[in-house]
Each structure stands twice: as C-alpha cells, then as structure tokens.
Amino acid sequence: MKPNIFQVLFIILIVGFYGCNESPEKSIKAKSNTSTVLDKKLNVLFIIADDLNCDLGIYGNNMVKTPNIDRLAQRGIVFENAHNQYPLCGPSRASFMTGMYTNQTKITENNMNLRNSVPDVTTLGQRFRQQGYQSVRIGKIFHYDNPSAIGTSGNDDIYSWDQTVNPYGRDKIEEHKINTLIPRRYGGTLSWLAADGDDDEQTDGIGANEAIKKLDDFSKSNTPFFLAVGFFRPHTPFVAPKKYFDLYKRDAIEIPESSSEYLKTLPVPAAKSIRAKKSQLNLEKNLAQEIKEAYYATISFVDAQVGKVLDHLEASGLDENTIVVFTSDHGYHMGEHGHWQKQTLFENATRIPLIISMPHTENKAGMAKRSMSPVELIDLYPTLMELTNIETPRHVVGKSLQAVMHNENALVRGSALTRWRNGYSIKTRRYRLTRWGQNGTLGYELYDHKTDKKELLNLAANQAYKTVMDSLKQVLDQRIFEASVKPDGLGRQIDNAKTVPKAKNITYGDLHDTQGKIIYFKEK
Image 1 (cartoon, rainbow, N blue to C red):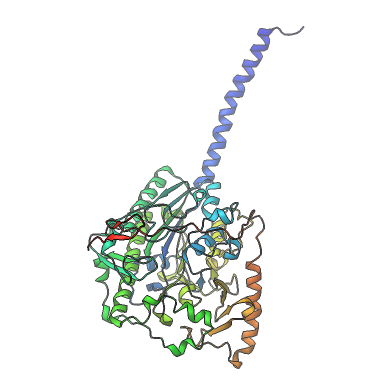
Image 2: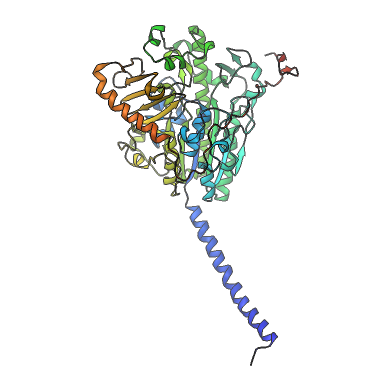
C-alpha cells in the first residue's frame, strides 16, 4: 500500500529533524577544527623602513643609536650579506612583495601600478589573505611618493590587504619649515629638520600607535595576522624630534672624500650614477655633517617607533606566536663615492639590513646569530610561506631562508643579484662583479671585499684577477638569464606599462596660480 500524503510529510519531518540535529554538530565541529587550525598559525609582523642602509648598531656602526633594532637582532638572525633587487623604492617593493625580479615584474620606475604589469600575480599580503589571515598595511609598503603622498594610499595594491591605515602627521603640516638644498623639493633632494613636538605627532609615530591598536585587536579576537608596518623615515626629508638630534655630536661625524681621478677608474654609467645629483656634489663639510647628523637622528627616531611596537607585541603576549621581520627597501649613500642617496650598484645602495626573529628562539648569551650567505629581498616571500606552512605560489622565484635560520653557516644561493637601469651586479661572499650594457659593452667593475670593503679599487682590468673575473662573468650572465625568464603560474605579463602621471608636491600653506606655480611661500 502506498503511503498517503500525511505519512510522507511525517517521514520528511523525522528525517529533517535528525538531519538538522546532526548537521549543526558536524558544522560546529568543522568550524571548531578550522578555528583550531587558525589558532595554531604563526602571525607575521613585517616592519620595513624607507631608505635605510646598514648604519645600525647591530651591523657595526658604533655611532648610530638603535637599541631596539639591536634588541630584536639578539633574538633572531642577522643577514649580513642581504641585497635588494633594484635600488629604487617602487621597483624594489614590487619585487619583494611578489617574490620576483624586476625583469619579471616589468617595474623599473616609481609610480607604476603593479596590476598594470602583472595583473594576475598573487602578492605576499594577498597570499596570507587566501589562507585566513587578516592582512593589514600601515604606512608605506608598496610605493608612495615620499613625502608628497603621505596620508594617501600612494601606488598601493588593494588586493594585498583587508585593511589599510595611512598616517599623516606634523611633519606634513609643517613641511614648510624643512631645510632643503632646493626650495620646496624634499623627496629626491637632501632635506632635513629637527622638529618641535614629540614622537606621537609625527607620521611614523602615528603609524606605530596604529600598529599597537591593531595588535590589541588581534590579541582580543585571536585573529591570525600579517601586519605590515611601513615607516616613511629615514627617507628624505630627514625629520625627527629634536631629542634625536641631541644624541649626536655633529663635529664627530665623518664625511668620506672622493676625487675626480677616482671616476676615471669606473665605467661611464657607474661614474654617472654617483654624480647624477648636481645639487649634492662637493658639499661643504659642515653642511654635509649637518645632513648626515639628521639622517642618523631619523634612524634613531625610527628605532624608537620599532621599540614601541615590539614592546607592545610582548606585552600582549603575541610575541609567543609571531615571526618578526625588519628590513629596508634598499641601501643609501652618505657621501661614499662622493654620492648621497641611492640608485647605484655599489654596496652602499644594494645592501640592506635584514633581521628575522622566530618565537621561542633563544640565542646563546643573547647574541645575534649572523649569516654571510648572499641573500635577496625576494627570498622573504618563500621564507615566510615556509615558516607559516603555507604553499608558495609557483611564480615566486626567491629561495626560502629557513635552512640558514637553522644553521647560519648554510648557503641558499651563491650570489645576490641587483639591477640598476642597464647595469647588473652580483655580490658573493667575497666579490662584487658589475656589468654595464648589453654583454658588458659599457664596462665592468670587480671588487674584492677581502681587501676593499669600500669598493674603491676596480680590479676588472687586473690580470691577477682574470680567472676570478672570467668565472664570475659566467655566473652573472646566467643569473641575468634566469631573472629574465617568465615564471610559471604568473599569468599575464605586460611589457611597457606606463607610469602614473605625477603632479608636483603641494606644501600645505603655499599658494599657487592656475598653472601650479607658487605665488606665495608659507614662511617658517
């Protein structure tokens, strides 16, 4: 006998009842398991300074006061031989955030949007988002015009972040007070100010406080996070509260000397790179000391902000489950080779500080572990993936540094590669070889760091180094070839993407005519 409609409905209700009673339990269990997995994830606090070289205490500079960065290093590993892939903010940041060389990102200038060149790429922050992390940016991670774009998102990649914070401080409001070699020029011009007020009024002080707020939120919600904190200093203008200037004796600051005869020993592109900025050539010693003092003061100011964030990480207990990375986008000349700022293929511009600290890692006698392995900034992406047990996207060509973190004597690569315009340079443990022009048509540079750490004696034509030279040429050629191959899984790769048109900086308080010409300068 066929069941009537009421019997059918009864059966449906009974099945539904037991199904509904079983389903929530399974659902809750699934959610619980997911929550447990997320709870076990290691967090990442990624801190990057802008235009910071290795003038830090932990890197052997006994004059610069950086107690907080030094403290972080004592709990982690210091990479002594780490180098960026392009000594300019925009290309370098696009490179390490994608794990690729600039020949692969197709970004070799500032003010280029990442997705115009590699629209399908998965960035570091984006990959953390894909794995259940809150990915948060505070300040400068991708390129900003500094200082003109402070307070905005600059050339950010919106797909990398769940949340963003764009701090804006007194250094922008009082920009008119800044000393500069060229009136109203700051970002690419040597400029400086011993500022009134305290840390919390400055853009980077505000950024540090915003980072502390986010750490509180993550601690309360037990949320796994990738928190990227990008400080704008010590990038020009070198602005910091006066107390940081008081840490230094200006007269004791040394300024390197460079002769015109030295330039004759270099290939033409190399010589041009260290004489490109006419306004900063042959500075009077007193002025040069004042500017270098400002750079050091600004480093100490950034160090204090790093200290605030690290202190709060510990106070919240998050340090028990958080990887901390500290680095910079490229190095910086402070008069070496007669040059100031970046955009060269000398050690001063290619080398960057890189410190990684893992939770529950205790070094012997509180001493930092140190590695001389050649390391590249693009190695950060796969390293953080491996440390957090996340699968690395196929397009990432950097190498994980986990082996070096376990054994500081290990090597993950034989050389670090840096490009600048039509030049390429590799740094091994001992040597630097730089090639200019296609196949070296514009010349070579060879430096032996065993006898010449300052890279002042070009050995490219020295017959005693012919065997070394020939061997390194082959290595460099192969490195350039590999760095130019389109990575698997990248998706679209677009050549000749245009830069974003750049407007002139507007200093708050100045007045302009309809053509943008300043007709009134706000007084100091």
